[in-house]
Amino acid sequence: QDTVWVGAPLRAHRRCDEPMFSISNAVAYDGLMVFGTPPRSEFTHARRSVWLDIRSGHTDGKWVPAEGTSLQNTVTMLLDRGLAAEEIFVVSPFRQVANEARKILKTQIPADRVGTVHTTQGKESDVVIMILGTHPDASGSQLGH
Image 1 (tube, rainbow, N blue to C red):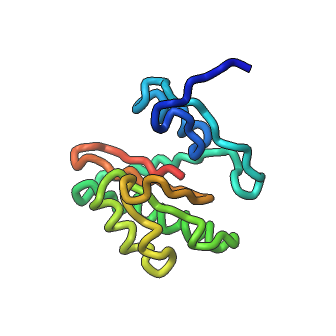
Image 2: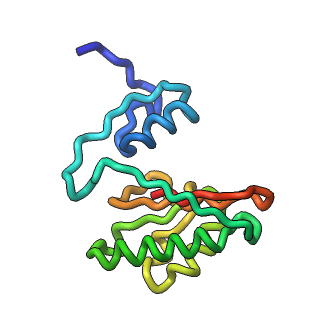
């Protein structure tokens, strides 16, 4: 009903669903984006996020092997339920984490479906699993999808 100016790049955002839209809008865009994602079918989008809290005292740099185990179990479950590997993206903010995830998923997901946030920017997928990794001094980590 109201007129909204959308002249700046990325102002009308049509890719993310909630809660990722609101998080990105608050953190990176100071609330300037306009939510423009069209409604999706029930199959394409379940309208939910799941966060798994993976606790581990062992890390190898930013890679948390316990996260890798949980990632592999999650991907196996999704594939066993009939989801095609090409419908999954595995994303991390860190190259080391993305490289390790690619290694453990090499028989399950094509290598180009696993990468950093930057390498997957602008792409879409029905299922996106974000594996966060951790700082070597951190006491815990999270796997989100």
